[in-house]
Image (tube, rainbow, N blue to C red; front, side):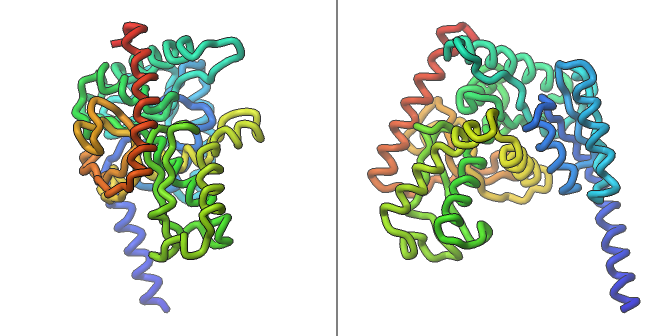
Length: 335
């Protein structure tokens, strides 16, 4: 028993030394509910040496950071969380930066107005981050997410492997939740992907390929039930907004933290992310959700899976919707 305890102590010391040696710095821009939950999950996973929260509201990020740091002894993490009111010099040397900033659509606001405002915010934030951290990998959360990811590519000129849209990771998690609900089983039993645009009309849940411990879910569920699962997945965000009166934050924050973790620790896990396509899936000059491998370089590989004719048609239709929204960026002279 004593020997086992010694091993545990040594292992813990090794983990702490490893953490100190990594010096992984992560910035989260936007200290609202999504940004703060993202910072919390990153800290709890204890793989980053520092998380910097940035917000435009005076002392808001500092307050969130202090509140989170007061949970460190309770949750057992050593990550340092600091806040900054719009001072991007505090983000210098960031390895990964998450952009959650932007505004929700308000009553009477046109789609063009919303995109114009959020695009201006994302462009300004991206430029400030790169100014202080030229080697940073960007993860875009701001909506409309696929279009904001496309804007980040056009505005910054960063290599395509260093700009990642989060949406598909969240959509896939919601898909797995709905499948586990239908199967009355743990979500950990489920494997499933959602591709396409991050919108209720653009998502393409791949029910044909979803499985429970390697057994296709079609062995357990009828076509009708699977269709309902897909439909419920596509309106997952809207369902929660209707229930909460605002956008969800726990699952989005967890989705982002999983992407950051895979990159920071070079895990090479596969997620659906919005990435710039240059011929993959027959699409060009478009950012849309497809499976990718995430590692220390950001996007290590775009995974091309064989789609059936129906799935190809749905993805093509989704791509048209994303392209139409992207066109507004040109009309508004945003790049």
